[in-house]
Image (cartoon, rainbow, N blue to C red; front, side, top):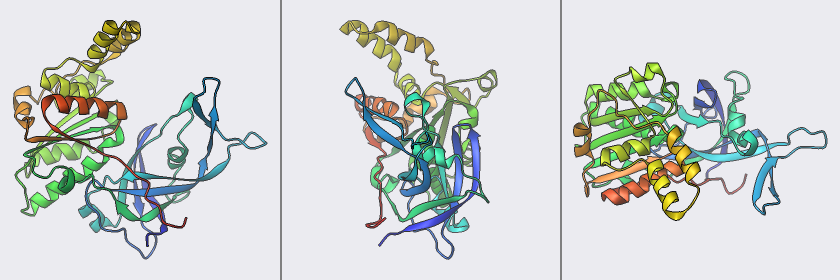
Length: 336
């Protein structure tokens, strides 16, 4: 039976004020269960700043800080499942699991209960995370991409995590002579260059060419430095896909829909004005990518922002691609 175990954080690498990679070592004398790239595990911290559910004047639920009589946050245990970003071969070698996490923000910019606690972690100090001794999930290539000639991965933000594990594992297997002949394409988008976790590793995998792999990285808040980088595109991942498929931007469609329905066209127009137009990296061409997006032979795997995933689902349906997205469940022991 799976149990809670006491893990230790051995590194915590802040990519930005709200994004980080950290590595977790298992409880002393134990090892993590075997797993497949794309799976997840439940993590827990004991000192999370709790929230309470309040129904407001609008009759909608709101989650506000739960304060004690002195006005201080009440603390308690919170658990959630997280995709593993380390590849299985890496865990076999190091004994550790890697995670890619974001400091979530709720109403009034109040930080997420568990992720706020993660961002207080200090290796060698406050470095304990509990984990369930069970790794679960079926968001694996074996389950979700079986039979597809073209596998397109779309990772936005920390939704990159399962794809990081997959790409690294595929490259490792190919180096050992176990290539599968499938064409893999990764669209990796975040706000800034600094937040593109594993960027250099993906470039190295593409350069090594042990697997048929195309890597398309982009940022939605480009700087002058980014615009000069031939390996870096611009715009959100869903709009890059729209660009490749010859479709209008999502924001353009929403403006057209608002105007046709007599809705809030001003808000839609403002959203369009704020949108970074999609641009492929200079080192990548539409002609090179389009054969990797063949109708009927392509599966699109996505993980990340729910709004972006919903738009990518619409695109997949229009283009006759199979669509698969990551869903998590909180896998807990029978007694906690």
